[in-house]
Image 1 (tube, helix red, strand yellow):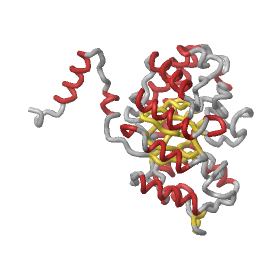
Image 2 (tube, one colour):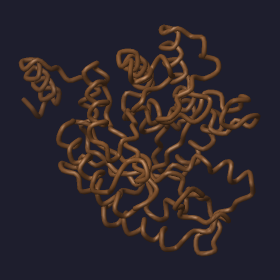
Image 3 (cartoon, helix red, strand yellow):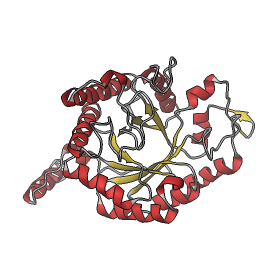
Image 4 (cartoon, one colour):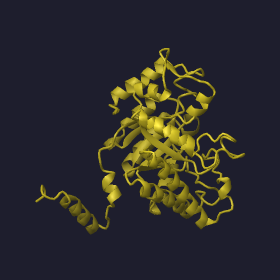
Length: 341
């Protein structure tokens, strides 16, 4: 009978789950498929660098920066998106880098390279991080219900546009480094009910457009276990449903490598979600070793932040690849069997 009807097994699982008081959703069945390992890079600065005339080379051969990264084992690209970055108070006044139109062009380049794509919503016209979570200018006077609707609609409109050109993201961050909340002051972490309501609207939009897209909650607490648990516990207690825990790790703010390891080990044992270090720069080998050695394959992978020109970048300011660092990623990709399409 099992061979004739492959719906029997899921049905039995649902029945058994209901008997213990928990019924998994169709989305949760989807998320149980085999997980691919991630060797990722955030290269949102690429269009700005190219506008300045920077050309990227590997061993003196000029190539698209995306292809160079792929050649050295990367299989995922992360892009940030702002609401209205072209605004006077926005990230890119008058030019609009990291808006929807620039994102659509970059998304097409990523998919043309046969790589996967993580989209990072800042829900702001400019940088959002633990020290600032400014509302978009158009949302400043919105009340609670208007903000919920705006979050939902902006998320859905963005993802609909990407889906229409065949470049839907494989993973979506609903907020950037939101351990202190988002859309301040309304969505501050000191108002966890409001923050959870905002996140639910964003997640609802993601799942309506593409139920298979993984949803990440991104916090900047790489070596800070108490803060990580406090945030995750409060969101889970309010029934915020997500697939991936994203952590930033910069040692000047987030502790030692030992603290990173201790925190991620605890999170891997405590929560069902997978774990990604979605921003880091220093200690490239060590960070990847920590993530890929988490128990039960909970460590999905990493995203180096802005390797094209920031901090310990893998290219110099002229766009020339640094052989030692590019080769390091080639070695890490082979060591951890990072899949390539």
